[in-house]
Image (cartoon, rainbow, N blue to C red; front, side):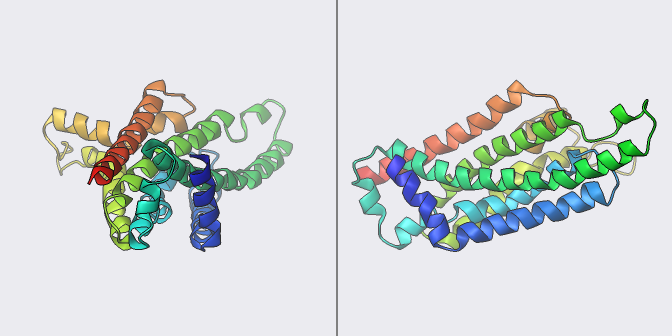
Length: 257
């Protein structure tokens, strides 16, 4: 697994895809941070993290579309299947390489919070002693948001890898991944749509419950409020496990063929 991990991690930066991904991620996070936090003159970061999760709909497929699709296109898939490594090790090696690049982008985006700390320090200097403790970002909200981003990314990367294993066309893998991840991310918003009378657009409560359960955003809010949700952690890790397991099963079937 380690050899595949190193190979895939190196390939991200031999080809321009790794640089493109990190560049797009950091620019998108900076733009979102400016419009949701700095220009709004607020210390609340909940909106920033929520919009950044929505942006993962496009960013994650950019990271995962080539992982298995390229192996098929370049006819190197048989080398993987006959390599002295288990299928689980092969899949996990590729998964952790993508997750490492993703985590680098998330940690790099934390630089956005530096100007916020300077603004808070300047405002504290201009206020009375009794108000200084209430000025500034809440560390729990920022840490919770970063942890949630890592968990959501871990889940969605597994989804993208599974889709990449089903096709040899990188563009097809990207388009399908955008559709699936977009649905998983935004489907919970359907439960918030109301008609002219203020009634939910989806009348059946059980359907709203199912949609909220499937939605990635539905379990994200607690983290942005500084609340560590163990049930949400289990949910995101379960998604990652299920789709990685399905990817292994795809290649087990292919090997026996």
